[in-house]
Length: 382
Image (cartoon, rainbow, N blue to C red):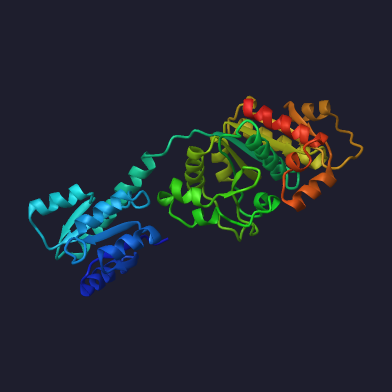
């Protein structure tokens, strides 16, 4: 994606000349003809860099720069001041106002491009180094296969935390699947694909303010970053760099951060699992699911070097049926203890999904709700 540059100058010819020079190098240009326009456009357009003329009639560049730095939404935007003034005192005034660099007119196109690239690179490095502290407990949910109840479990655990242990804290559920995401649909939330707005941005522009703007609050108290509902292969891919930036920002504003990771070990999922404080592998008592779970757990503990104590296996028995797989048989097959078993409740699950409310809230007295509450309490303490 092309970097966006806001050019602020009251002279039309100067804006056209600079704009043409930069467009030829692949930049997207936004123009402002006054300081007031610049202050209006900067928060809306969120440019990657501002080129700001000093001499303007309504408000000089120094004052515009100071106001941009004073506004939290634009405080970190890189700014290059551009003027015909060549005195050292003028340059000092520019830097004191908050400019990242200072150029004098006229400027050679190659020098302008070089200065812009240098400022953008410095800004990118600084932003990556200034990661906010991760305060959240990070819990990842991954299924042995599709349809085992991974999203349902994540949604209900989040609801229990939001009304219980984290009642006065912040619980966030983020759907980190690359398509076919259902957490927001289960909760009957209006906003779909909130994560898409983040994937459409360069990594260095993903900050707390942008991430928080994509969250939607459910009546249970959960805040949700919805995933993309488009099919895999059509949905925008979730790259490791974007996943890391999104999780880092969410983790700085949440106390509990639950990640619905879907099925399988993509490159991105591998990175995310390594960062999790705890991982829940969801299985069902069926031959195919158990075979896939065995392979998944082996890969997680061998190739990813994840310790067994960091992984909890939860069995979701969705439909009452005669099964040859006892708890002991499953544990022997997986070489891993079962942390919990969710009892069958297909009718309650269907009604809850249609109502857009987790089972732990709509049928709080049921046996399945009690099991789900126990799992949430265990994960909060583990």
